[in-house]
Image (cartoon, rainbow, N blue to C red; front, side):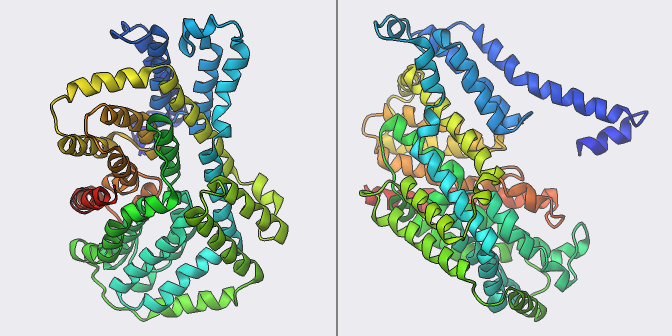
Amino acid sequence: MNEKSATSHSPTPVSKPKDGKKNRLVMMALPIIVAVLLLFVPVPDGLPPYAWHYFAIFVGVIVGLIFEPLPGAVIGLTGVVAIALCSQWVLFSPEQMAAPKFQLAGASFKWAVSGFGNSTVWLIFGAFMFAAGYDKTRFGRRLALILVKYLGRRSLTLGYAITLADLLLAPFTPSNTARSGGTIYPIIANLPPLYGSKPNDPSARKIGSYLMWVAITAACITSSMFLSALAPNLLALALVKSIVGINISWGTWFIAFLPLGLLLILTMPLLAYWFYPPEVKVNDEVPLWAARELEKLGKLSRNEILLLVFVCCALMMWIFAAAWIEPAMAALLIIGLMLWTGVLEWSDITGNKAAWNTFVWFATLVALADGLSSTGFIGWLGKEGGMLMSGISPGVATIVLLLAFYLLHYLFASTTAHTTALLPAMLTIASTIPGMNMNVFVLLMVTSLGIMGIITPYGTGPSPIYYGSGYLPTKDYWRLGTIFGGIFLVALLVIGYPWMSMMF
């Protein structure tokens, strides 16, 4: 969009790269400008100056994550390094620095790399390796093709096939972008042409539009259904443990969302069929195409069988053995087995740029979010927020905070940035409200992270993939995002909230 605009209004071709470079420099300067401006804002009453200075840099990092002039990992690493270098003014209190055995350089470095020792960060990394196994063995593609073969004759059942394929892959794929872009989208992109449905054409409504909307909606639902289906879920887990001391197991998360998740999975393709109906209802070519693709794959390979055994073992350990083996250690154990058996090679580990990028990104974000707590900013924010909400019943406060958390996602193009920026504040405010059931509140917050991605064309990683497919016009996407986003939110409040209250 920006490049086309620049080309159409530029007097000469050479102005296009200049404009692009200028825009990039503005985006790079914006986080710094925001941080500096906040540094000159008077320190709020009751907050230590060093905590406010820390918050200023933290906000600058969040602005950088929202606009992304550079990759998220670079933004996070820059923020950590900047704070560590200026730690005597922004990280440690005068009392800490006056302690006899306190060494500034060592303490600063220890804080800067603290996120890399976080078990949740390693769990994210491990899950990325599982996804690499799905991709290398082509087991993920096989699962999707089997469902299309047996459910692909009718448009509605094809929608269910796409949903079930995402459901089967989600527990072992922590990136919904990788899940959609690497497995689901490449398969379903082949289906509309079989119906004469073309992108950026009136024929898109024959079936392509329906399939693409079902796919993005399914990705959002499964991202909320499983702790390990969305990387920010795992980041949220670390933040919850750090801020309010609540541990959420894989099984607890799954059971908490299970009634709502099953309902959405079972009804969503039908709802899409009603709200965005395909023109073609039946086609015999799709199952035949899937059957031909399966023939090309051949029988289950040794590595596919081993991968299936390994991921099932990991899932069992995550659900039933968390008291005996740390989930991240279970993931590392499975990675070791995959390496020893040849399911993965060491080059698959070292060459997985997405995994290492996410590893660095989340490690720095965990350290940055932890700094908000250690400097006392979170405690101050909770006290002030609690005073503003004094007199409100815990039930009403829960709904108000959840609505704010959910709807503010319109401002974010990254679920990670949303989680890092808003979840600590919401948790802190809620913890100061007398009678608040924090277990229920925490589960409502974290399980909303996936489903809120449906509301905009930029709300979650897979959104631009399907939005850019040519089958979902802008006005349709915003209209459907509002409808389905509203359905998901109401369902979370009407079904999820009472169910989670029964659990705790």
